[in-house]
Amino acid sequence: MEEKKFDINSIIGFILIFGILIYIMYQNSPSPEEVEAQQKAKQELVEAEKKESKQNEALVTKGEDYTNTSALDSTRQVALQNKVGSFAYALGLSGEDQTIVETDVFELKFNKKGGHLAEVKLRNFVDYDSVPIYLVKDQNSAFNITFGTSDNRTLNTQDFPFQPSVSKNGENTIVSMKLKVSESSFLEYRYELKPNDYMIDFSIKSQGLSGVFNTSQPISLDWKQKSIRHAKSISYENRYTRLTYRHDGDKIDKLAQAGDDEETVDDVEWFSYRQHFFSSILVPNDGALKNVAISSKDLVEDEEIDTSFLKLYTAKLPLAYNGGEVNKNFGLYYGPTDAKTLKTYEKGLEESIPFGWGIFGWINKMIFIPLFGFLSGFLPYGFAIIVMTIMVKIVLSFVQYKQFLSQAKMKILKPELEAIKAKYKDNKMKAQQETMALQSKAGASPLSGCLPGLMQIPVFYALFMFFPTAFELRQKSFLWADDLSSYDSILDLPFPIPLYGDHVALFPILAAIAIFFYMKMTTGQQMAQQPTQEGMPDMGKMMKYMIYFSPLLMLVFFNNYASGLSLYYFISNLISIGIMLVIKNYIIDEDKVLAKIEVSKTKPKKQNKFQKKMADMMAQAEQQKQAQQKNKKK
Image 1 (tube, rainbow, N blue to C red):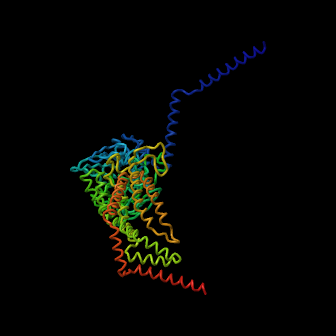
Image 2: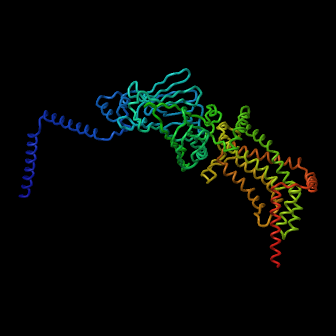
Image 3: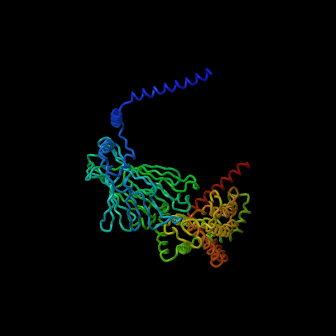
């Protein structure tokens, strides 16, 4: 009973104490007027502390400071004035976030923030999946000028809003983007768009900013762009995607095809963010650029994962002040990597296309590009390739004739060559001397068949460079091939095969079969005629391996290449087989060749300097050998 009574008393006591505390707190609480006065004083203290903190912090600008699109109140105007100085004026101007302009070839979107292009859509082209071609989209490109101000700030144009205006100059459309300090003082990006023209006249000009710029601090333009995938094979497209530039007059150079690369170059006349079939090119119109830092970064590490972009290109180039102002004129090209189109600008832009170096490029530019352009003007593109192949093979048929004539002579001389080999089996040096003498008299040197064959190499390599870069072949179909500039897949594999790919292309298979039979007919005959020299590699065995290795290489390597190139090799080898059969069966008469050889052997043969030198060397070697043998006997 006592415990229970204590418990009740304790509870009552706690209640009483709690009530007393509440009463005391109520009695000591401030009146509503006092509360309002305290809150006001506290707010003023916080504002004072913020102001002091802002005065002490570094003048660093951030993107969020520039997001206002309506007129600023005076408080924020003062705060931004402290942040960005004179350029706070631009932040208080309203306007649309994007300006859209269309021409015959473009659909362009200009960003208010930064003043440059947010989208570049080419109206006349689509990619492998019928999606419109964009060279700039989804923030893959950044265009920014970094400059110093007279109040010791470093600012970037990409952080500020530009004021847009669109006007007409005859048929041309003028887009002006101005970063304003006042209505009469500004930095302007001016774009002039012409009808049916991929080249934009682009200028950077300032007005009334000579007292705003810090001319002792460098001013530079930075242009970054990631190349967007447009082709079916990302690895094949990436192979032909390279930063190319012209400098020091007429020198053309490129950054690395694979991996990462960078370079600093003087006297740059233009540089091209070249993609396989599309390019973004910057051309200075008022003098070469100095000290341009360019770089390229490969973005395709795994083509199963990295499927959106190919390479990241960057360029940083210094601009110059003139009387405290900036005034620089450029051409800005967004369009096809097409030799015919690029050549119209007369700035050597077509040299950005990899036609091949030296004589190979000359053959393409002077022969194959004009020839194919002529043929494709009235023939379907697949048939234009076939007709051009026939024309090339007819022109080079004399080379095959020389090769087959040489083979026929070696075949006829084979019994005599074997007899010399047996007669001098213990004297290899003498056997070689007699063999060379016989071949010289008969006019049947093995080199006479090799040298004409070497003449085909420039043509072979030139066409190897021509077909993958021929813009005319892009998305042109022939038979089962949907696109002659890409592979002609007839079967998609469930998994990729290393080096081969994830599909089966038919034209490389046909080309491999044709080259196999051609080599079987020609190299097989040479193997039978080729005498084996002691101490020398077995050429017959090497040729035998080549018969199987070359078609296999063709099959694997060209599976991801342009089907137009595989079509050329297929038709070329078919024609070569036909020419060989005609020459062998209807042109070369072995009896007549033998008669000519016999007549030639009876005539005194004048040796050229090389032959005479070789004969003298072999004779000296023979004399030394005989002298050594005599010394051994002694």
